[in-house]
Length: 375
Ligand code: PEP
Ligand code: MN
Image 1 (cartoon, rainbow, N blue to C red):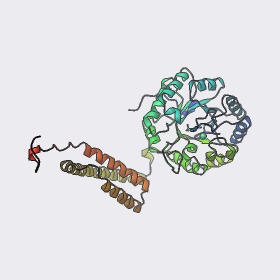
Image 2 (spheres, rainbow, N blue to C red):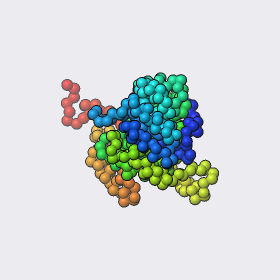
Image 3 (cartoon, rainbow, N blue to C red):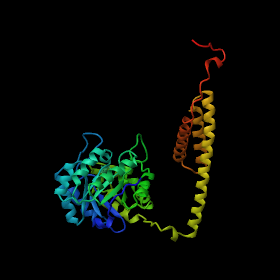
Image 4 (tube, protein in one colour):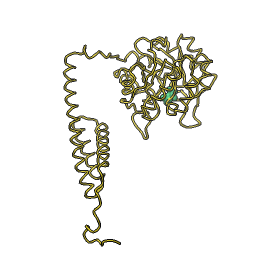
């Protein structure tokens, strides 16, 4: 169920937003000069809010863990010089306190922190009675409830200027992107909390600069309210996330290239779109009928398996289904990963359905051929 939240519109943030809420700045504040140069160059482009990490949550110890407290002053001064508000990550109540003392204009809760309700609650307690905007990044793991829980905790503490930041989800192994976007999660968040501002952080999704434009455009196509992009005056020399940072000039080009689409109410849609939607509705209803038919078949086969006392899971059959369906899906221009995911879901549900079929009662021993009675 969607929680009752009291959330302000983006216009109440009193920040220089035109069409989209655009946050840009270095992954980390590294030196007074670096942050100043980056922010001055950024100011030539469209920017709503400057970002800069002061305390850096690093996966492994020993890498650059942030410049710490003295960086707050440099960040604020750079923002003042450019006439722009600034934001940083707060991971505990002491960070919150230091940021407020330094006049930082907005805070964000990082992905690692959102993962821990204890940590989020401590931050929320520190925010009680304080009027500062807070951005909540999604947790590392693809768990919408955890993300919503963090947003609720902050809102319950009285913070009404809140925004969700989609930065992708961590998975094991090598993938095209550093963090998988799993778009259906932010899209479901938007469905449940339509008034909550939602932006995308393509830098942390991509991990590599060359993919950022495509993911940023995708976020615009999905009607996100803005972007958070890592920008550094000399990305190759960056002390953290060097591969995903871009120069202010590259950022400017990216922003100018973005195409913003609008969602028009269904009544204003052209006839062609309405007809196509009707067709999609019919196809979806066929899909559901077919799935129900498939599961009915699965139930019958499950009963047989139970009666014959053979395993519900048949590895060879599953291997065959997966390979065959992926092959025929790809032949019909469906992506391999989509067909694979779809059939993994279907197979999992088929096993669950069979699992719910009661096991056949063992026949009494005296009915079994060749077995001694008793003993
Ligand atoms: C960051 O924005 O600097 C950061 C560490 O991001 P995340 O929490 O999304 O990993
Ligand atoms: Mn970073």
